[in-house]
Amino acid sequence: MRVVDPELVVHIFAPLTGPRAAAAYAEARRIWLNCRLQLGMGSPVPELPQHLPAAVADLPGGTETVLAAQERIGADYQAVARRVDDMLNVSVILSHRDPSHLDWSELINNWVGVAAPWPDGLLTRAHLYQAKIEDGTPREIDPVLAGELTGGLPVELPERWWAGGTRVGEHLVTYDPVEQAGPQSLLVLAPAERSAELNAWTWSDGSAALPPVARLLGRPPPPATAPPAFSVPVAPTSVSETARRVLVCASDEQVRDRMHVFLRSIGLKPIERDECVEATHKLMPTTREIMLAGLHLAAVTIVVATPEVTNEAGVMRPSQDLMFEAGLAMALERQTILVVAGDLVLPAGIGDGYIRLADSAKAKQSLVRRLMLAGSEPDTSGGSWLEPGVFEGLDAYTRRPR
Image (cartoon, rainbow, N blue to C red; front, side, top):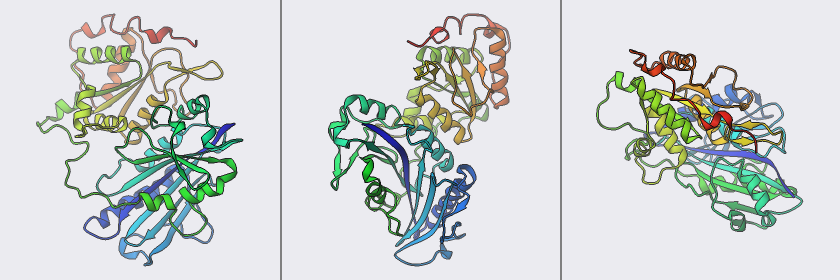
């Protein structure tokens, strides 16, 4: 028994009436265009328009109408837009071309890049992480297979999640993540031979109808009366002070602490986790919300990749969570500096524009130059910041596969 064919289904909802309708529709069209430009959905679906009308007033009437559809060659990425009464629904499905690749991280990173920055107060969305069980059913998942599955999920599930879940019909089972803030999320599993049933419930049955799960989750955005989710502290900050704020993303706590020490030695102000939590204005923010708040507070983000996980070939790689944070920072077009500490292999497509961390003056000077290029204002007067010690003896340098 194994889990195959992981897919990400996203349902977006926007109001077509009221004072926010025009702005919400414009954001939905932006995301629709980004699907074509960034995800390669340049092919029309037969017998359907590919482009959304320019304005709400140009939309056809009807209680449930398909407005447009587009896909990437191979049909692994598709998007469809519908009018459902006074609501616009945009649905997107992203699939791996290799169905055995049990990982949703690349899919969610691609989606975040298309949708960012997310227009809170104008659109709402739901994320469905779905997959199929070969030679078994969701109720037959054991702890080993459950561990393999959750290793590729960008959301956290409760302990022994596979023993619970909610049955949909005779064959589908849904599971709720631990973190409920932010976009609604569900893990949906079905036997491989029930693929058509799964897609009909989450994505499409081939007709113009909104799938049942989208009908359950669809809702208008709440009134924009709450404080902005990612507003900065009320106290005024000068441009110079803002330019000194730096967010450090690192899975390795020792590396993160040492980087904070170095940044303070050149007059910069690293952002602490508590600041990010407070900036969400929520009592129990999700990890993603905390990360987004930090990105909005920072002028520059430093992502430090360290060897954390070993693949089947015995090669060490950074954690998936860290690569998600890096992708989020780049998707939001934040000034991002990638630093590598230790012996590891980066994901394909990262390129070689990173800085190799060391306790040498050369490495520190490279980091300072990159900070300046990013618009930060490090204070390099004097030479104490070049003295050895701060990046010496990091555990990441000698970490090897077990």
